[in-house]
Length: 85
Image (cartoon, rainbow, N blue to C red; front, side):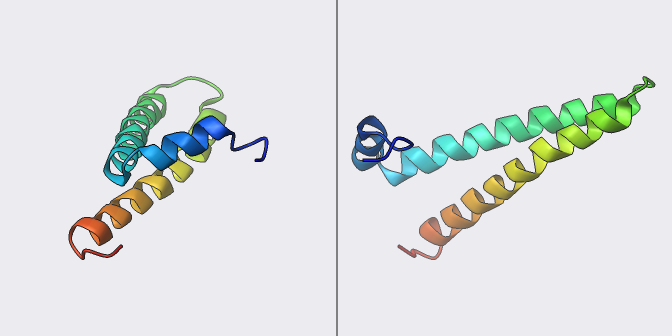
């Protein structure tokens, strides 16, 4: 057992179905992505100083969420449509 993945986490993933885990991760990624994209648009339309740094900081948060959202959608497509397991 490592310090990053404890026994509780292993038990959670061992007893929870794939559908529940991927749906939860997908919904979390979607909600966070939408919130950050809306915040980016609000900042982009505002006229305050330091806006460029704020937009770059949001890009740093948006990009990994976009990748994780794409990964979850691709995996759901592979499992549900292509029946790939």
